[in-house]
Image 1 (cartoon, helix red, strand yellow):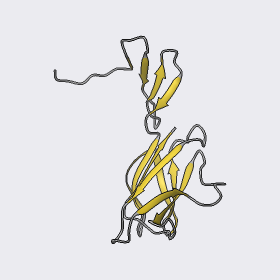
Image 2 (cartoon, rainbow, N blue to C red):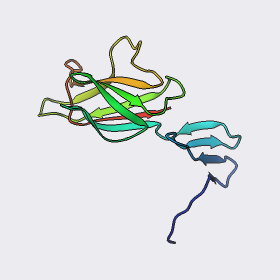
Image 3 (tube, rainbow, N blue to C red):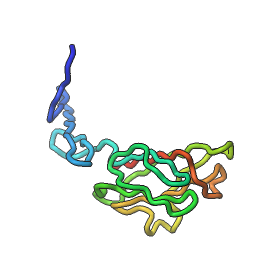
Image 4 (cartoon, helix red, strand yellow):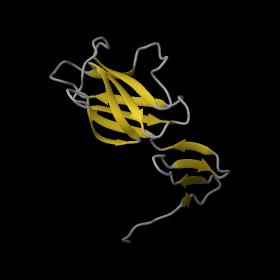
Length: 144
């Protein structure tokens, strides 16, 4: 079969019906139960960026910009705000020049301003989670 299937609603043919509902303008599609209650979403925001020298986004969804706050310290700014600050952030960072593994963590400022509906502060640290360092490739994914 060749071609494209286009649907506004996709439902399972069983007693436990799941509905995939299309997102609109910078919002991800949602997964709903048969009563229409949202039970999950696809990734709400993601970004792949160069964190060295002049910080630059390579590719993204629902990320308007990256702010360079200093060595290995960044703010990911969302195009469309999250519904609340109770989202999950996951990240990876590329090893630079054989210095060992790098970790991505929520910015360590007592979490007061690290996680908001419009932005997320992150830091890239060395394998010992001590020194903060720029990274050639940082990847962040946000789910809610």
